[in-house]
Length: 191
Image 1: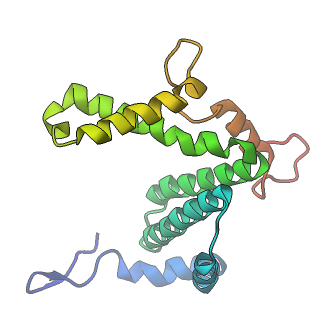
Image 2 (image 1 turned 120 degrees about the vertical axis):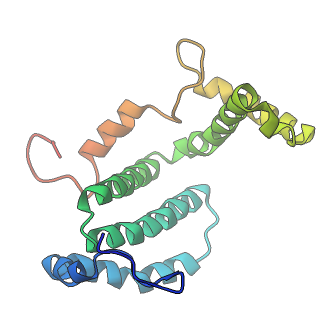
């Protein structure tokens, strides 16, 4: 990094300021499109939504938009390889959103998998850091157990353990590779 000049303990610059202009100019249309999204996203996120699918899509979009800001910062500072990690998460959000829009009946699985993850985290803490969960109120523990028991049968693997994902990863991956605006026009269906 080119350094972070300080004034009495305050960081005044982070990154490679000399690189910003050349990075911007090299992909000007892309950076301008990102800038043009600001007013659009502000208007979209002001609108109220009530359907579970719309709420999930909105949440994924908000997370994605925040990540787009982080990605832009990395790209403008020459950290393209690190930016690819964030870009992959953006792509996964797009695939998940497209999949849920095409399969709205699966929204309950997507939302209810939260209870599997919460129980898994609680079990982990019980085993690895029991002092940390001592402050957990018994009512909350019972609530976690009850919510888990209500949804767990839907997520069991053939071996009788809860899966690590809310749906069929293979199905989502196949869907993502054959659908959506990212698909090109090649006849073989590859990305």
